[in-house]
Length: 288
Image 1 (cartoon, rainbow, N blue to C red):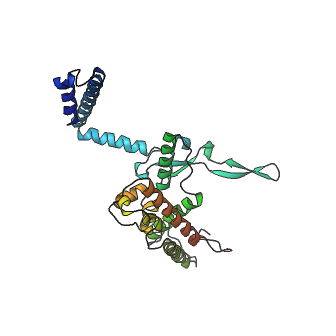
Image 2: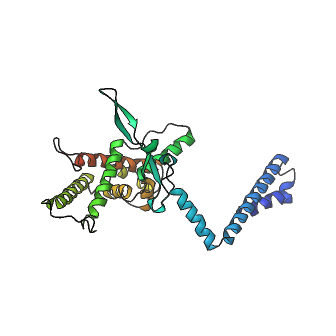
Image 3: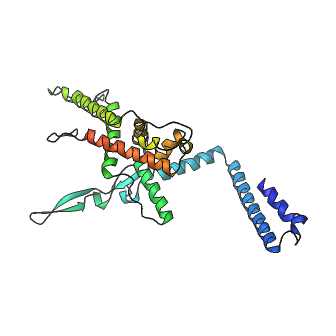
């Protein structure tokens, strides 16, 4: 439609007369027509190329994309292979205290042959990477979206929920079965303790909608109602969704104010979860 209008304007005798259109404007219209023709021809060639691809070639392209996304960081060394089911990985530098002199200690990299280890990337990594990319485009310095304690609480919550959900059967393999040790209750005690911690975190999250989100006017926040704090935390920590993805999934318009309000609500929920998770003074905690 636009292409036809521009070409009609550029080629029409009415617009080509000096009385109606000067030479500079006419040259600009013709330049726009040429650029539009080039873009349409390029798009047409790309579409024809995609149509000629067989299903096998499309599968190969998808496979190469998944393998590229699953490639481990180079700092982890060549021994770690790509695993598409594992998803993207993030390099982590293992640090430890090493003796220095007779009574001193120093922090050193303790990875095998100087290599880093890796862990699976989660929604917090994705959001931080997106924020850094946006800051680089604007030439600004990006501050962390979440504190280290908030990220640790979110990942610990995901670990607890996943481990507790898979604790229905203990060591079903023959190799893991042992004799009677007189400590048969330790397993079920751990399961009960983890369940209590998860319920305490759920109570800290609460069942209401975030107050920060409800301050957004209905004309700006989209077509749906507010998002529950529990749904926001579970979608990010357990579902691996970014805050923008959660807003889109609930029918909200994704723009700066909505994303900022939802992220603040998530930070507040993580802070409350941290207080609920923190063991009382003098106790050994869950990992003891």
